[in-house]
Image (cartoon, rainbow, N blue to C red; front, side):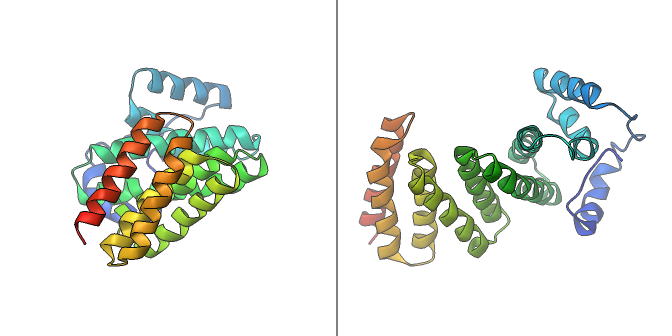
Length: 216
Protein backbone atom coordinates (compact mmCIF):
# COMPACT_ATOMS: atom_id res chain seq x y z
CA UNK A 1 0.00 0.00 0.00
CA UNK A 2 1.75 3.15 -1.23
CA UNK A 3 -1.02 5.71 -0.72
CA UNK A 4 -2.59 6.58 2.64
CA UNK A 5 -6.00 8.12 3.32
CA UNK A 6 -7.76 9.49 6.38
CA UNK A 7 -10.76 7.21 5.75
CA UNK A 8 -12.87 5.30 3.22
CA UNK A 9 -14.59 8.48 2.00
CA UNK A 10 -11.28 10.12 1.12
CA UNK A 11 -10.00 6.92 -0.49
CA UNK A 12 -13.08 6.57 -2.70
CA UNK A 13 -12.99 10.27 -3.62
CA UNK A 14 -9.31 10.09 -4.53
CA UNK A 15 -9.42 6.86 -6.53
CA UNK A 16 -10.21 8.50 -9.90
CA UNK A 17 -6.99 10.47 -9.68
CA UNK A 18 -4.90 7.91 -7.84
CA UNK A 19 -5.59 5.01 -10.23
CA UNK A 20 -3.61 6.79 -12.97
CA UNK A 21 -0.48 6.59 -10.81
CA UNK A 22 -1.26 3.42 -8.85
CA UNK A 23 1.83 1.23 -8.62
CA UNK A 24 2.83 -2.07 -7.09
CA UNK A 25 3.32 -2.17 -3.29
CA UNK A 26 6.61 -0.78 -2.04
CA UNK A 27 9.22 -3.30 -0.90
CA UNK A 28 9.74 -4.01 2.78
CA UNK A 29 12.49 -1.84 4.22
CA UNK A 30 14.33 -1.46 7.49
CA UNK A 31 14.13 1.84 9.35
CA UNK A 32 17.58 3.07 8.11
CA UNK A 33 16.70 2.15 4.52
CA UNK A 34 13.36 3.97 4.70
CA UNK A 35 15.01 7.05 6.23
CA UNK A 36 17.56 7.08 3.39
CA UNK A 37 14.77 6.89 0.79
CA UNK A 38 12.91 9.80 2.39
CA UNK A 39 16.07 11.92 2.73
CA UNK A 40 16.85 11.33 -0.94
CA UNK A 41 13.35 12.42 -1.94
CA UNK A 42 13.57 15.51 0.30
CA UNK A 43 16.94 16.56 -1.12
CA UNK A 44 15.56 16.38 -4.65
CA UNK A 45 12.35 18.20 -3.71
CA UNK A 46 10.27 15.17 -4.65
CA UNK A 47 7.35 15.56 -2.24
CA UNK A 48 5.33 12.85 -3.95
CA UNK A 49 8.29 10.56 -3.35
CA UNK A 50 8.26 11.51 0.34
CA UNK A 51 4.55 10.74 0.65
CA UNK A 52 4.99 7.34 -1.02
CA UNK A 53 6.65 6.21 2.22
CA UNK A 54 4.15 7.79 4.62
CA UNK A 55 2.12 4.70 5.49
CA UNK A 56 5.19 2.46 5.75
CA UNK A 57 7.06 4.90 7.99
CA UNK A 58 4.11 5.40 10.34
CA UNK A 59 4.34 1.68 11.07
CA UNK A 60 8.14 1.68 11.40
CA UNK A 61 8.27 4.63 13.84
CA UNK A 62 5.72 3.28 16.34
CA UNK A 63 8.45 2.10 18.74
CA UNK A 64 10.80 5.03 18.11
CA UNK A 65 11.42 7.86 20.63
CA UNK A 66 8.81 10.61 20.72
CA UNK A 67 11.14 13.16 19.11
CA UNK A 68 11.81 10.83 16.16
CA UNK A 69 8.13 10.10 15.67
CA UNK A 70 7.32 13.81 15.82
CA UNK A 71 9.99 14.61 13.23
CA UNK A 72 8.62 12.20 10.65
CA UNK A 73 4.99 13.11 11.29
CA UNK A 74 5.98 16.76 10.78
CA UNK A 75 7.85 15.87 7.57
CA UNK A 76 4.77 14.20 6.10
CA UNK A 77 2.45 16.99 7.30
CA UNK A 78 4.67 19.60 5.62
CA UNK A 79 4.74 17.54 2.41
CA UNK A 80 0.93 17.36 2.36
CA UNK A 81 0.69 21.11 3.04
CA UNK A 82 3.05 21.84 0.14
CA UNK A 83 1.11 19.53 -2.17
CA UNK A 84 -2.12 21.28 -1.13
CA UNK A 85 -0.76 24.60 -2.39
CA UNK A 86 -0.44 23.17 -5.91
CA UNK A 87 -3.53 20.95 -5.89
CA UNK A 88 -6.26 21.84 -8.38
CA UNK A 89 -8.58 18.89 -7.72
CA UNK A 90 -11.14 19.43 -4.92
CA UNK A 91 -10.95 15.84 -3.68
CA UNK A 92 -7.16 16.01 -3.67
CA UNK A 93 -7.23 19.27 -1.71
CA UNK A 94 -9.54 17.76 0.92
CA UNK A 95 -7.29 14.72 1.21
CA UNK A 96 -4.14 16.79 1.79
CA UNK A 97 -5.87 19.10 4.29
CA UNK A 98 -7.26 16.17 6.27
CA UNK A 99 -3.89 14.44 6.30
CA UNK A 100 -2.22 17.58 7.68
CA UNK A 101 -4.86 17.73 10.43
CA UNK A 102 -4.49 14.01 11.25
CA UNK A 103 -0.68 14.08 11.36
CA UNK A 104 -0.45 17.27 13.41
CA UNK A 105 -3.00 15.93 15.90
CA UNK A 106 -0.84 12.83 16.26
CA UNK A 107 2.12 15.06 17.14
CA UNK A 108 0.43 17.07 19.90
CA UNK A 109 0.80 14.56 22.75
CA UNK A 110 4.33 13.65 21.65
CA UNK A 111 5.41 17.30 21.71
CA UNK A 112 3.76 17.85 25.09
CA UNK A 113 5.61 14.90 26.62
CA UNK A 114 9.00 16.14 25.44
CA UNK A 115 8.04 19.76 26.27
CA UNK A 116 8.66 21.12 22.79
CA UNK A 117 6.12 23.87 23.32
CA UNK A 118 7.04 25.99 20.31
CA UNK A 119 6.45 23.08 17.92
CA UNK A 120 3.28 22.17 19.83
CA UNK A 121 1.98 25.70 19.34
CA UNK A 122 2.88 25.62 15.64
CA UNK A 123 1.08 22.27 15.28
CA UNK A 124 -2.04 23.67 16.97
CA UNK A 125 -1.96 26.69 14.65
CA UNK A 126 -1.42 24.46 11.60
CA UNK A 127 -4.43 22.33 12.56
CA UNK A 128 -6.54 25.47 12.95
CA UNK A 129 -5.54 26.81 9.54
CA UNK A 130 -6.31 23.54 7.76
CA UNK A 131 -9.64 23.20 9.56
CA UNK A 132 -10.48 26.59 8.04
CA UNK A 133 -9.57 25.20 4.62
CA UNK A 134 -11.93 22.32 5.43
CA UNK A 135 -14.62 24.94 6.25
CA UNK A 136 -14.85 23.85 9.89
CA UNK A 137 -14.48 27.25 11.60
CA UNK A 138 -15.83 26.25 15.03
CA UNK A 139 -13.23 23.50 15.38
CA UNK A 140 -10.57 25.79 13.95
CA UNK A 141 -11.25 28.44 16.60
CA UNK A 142 -10.72 25.89 19.40
CA UNK A 143 -7.26 24.96 18.12
CA UNK A 144 -6.28 28.56 17.39
CA UNK A 145 -7.32 29.54 20.92
CA UNK A 146 -5.17 26.73 22.32
CA UNK A 147 -2.25 27.94 20.20
CA UNK A 148 -2.74 31.52 21.42
CA UNK A 149 -2.95 30.46 25.08
CA UNK A 150 0.09 28.18 24.83
CA UNK A 151 2.07 30.96 23.15
CA UNK A 152 1.12 33.42 25.89
CA UNK A 153 1.93 30.94 28.66
CA UNK A 154 5.42 30.14 27.34
CA UNK A 155 6.42 33.50 25.88
CA UNK A 156 6.16 32.23 22.31
CA UNK A 157 5.11 35.50 20.77
CA UNK A 158 5.26 34.32 17.14
CA UNK A 159 2.74 31.57 17.92
CA UNK A 160 0.57 33.96 19.93
CA UNK A 161 0.72 36.63 17.23
CA UNK A 162 -0.27 34.29 14.37
CA UNK A 163 -3.10 32.72 16.34
CA UNK A 164 -4.51 36.08 17.49
CA UNK A 165 -4.41 37.38 13.93
CA UNK A 166 -6.34 34.39 12.58
CA UNK A 167 -8.85 34.55 15.42
CA UNK A 168 -9.37 38.26 14.75
CA UNK A 169 -10.00 37.61 11.07
CA UNK A 170 -12.56 34.89 11.88
CA UNK A 171 -14.34 37.12 14.41
CA UNK A 172 -14.66 39.95 11.88
CA UNK A 173 -15.90 37.57 9.17
CA UNK A 174 -18.58 36.34 11.58
CA UNK A 175 -19.67 39.89 12.45
CA UNK A 176 -18.12 40.00 15.94
CA UNK A 177 -16.58 43.39 15.33
CA UNK A 178 -15.39 44.39 18.81
CA UNK A 179 -13.94 40.96 19.53
CA UNK A 180 -12.11 41.01 16.20
CA UNK A 181 -10.66 44.47 16.89
CA UNK A 182 -9.52 43.42 20.37
CA UNK A 183 -7.78 40.37 18.91
CA UNK A 184 -6.01 42.54 16.32
CA UNK A 185 -4.94 44.90 19.12
CA UNK A 186 -3.53 41.89 20.99
CA UNK A 187 -1.71 40.88 17.81
CA UNK A 188 -0.23 44.36 17.55
CA UNK A 189 0.86 44.26 21.21
CA UNK A 190 2.60 40.90 20.77
CA UNK A 191 4.18 41.72 17.39
CA UNK A 192 7.20 43.73 18.69
CA UNK A 193 8.09 40.79 20.94
CA UNK A 194 8.25 38.07 18.29
CA UNK A 195 11.52 36.21 17.97
CA UNK A 196 12.03 36.88 14.25
CA UNK A 197 10.89 39.33 11.55
CA UNK A 198 9.35 41.48 14.27
CA UNK A 199 8.92 44.48 11.96
CA UNK A 200 6.97 42.42 9.44
CA UNK A 201 4.58 41.06 12.07
CA UNK A 202 4.03 44.52 13.54
CA UNK A 203 3.35 46.05 10.11
CA UNK A 204 0.90 43.27 9.16
CA UNK A 205 -0.92 43.59 12.48
CA UNK A 206 -1.19 47.37 12.09
CA UNK A 207 -2.45 47.05 8.51
CA UNK A 208 -5.17 44.60 9.55
CA UNK A 209 -6.24 46.72 12.49
CA UNK A 210 -6.49 49.88 10.38
CA UNK A 211 -8.39 48.00 7.66
CA UNK A 212 -10.85 46.65 10.24
CA UNK A 213 -11.39 50.10 11.76
CA UNK A 214 -11.99 51.70 8.35
CA UNK A 215 -14.56 49.03 7.47
CA UNK A 216 -16.72 49.90 10.50
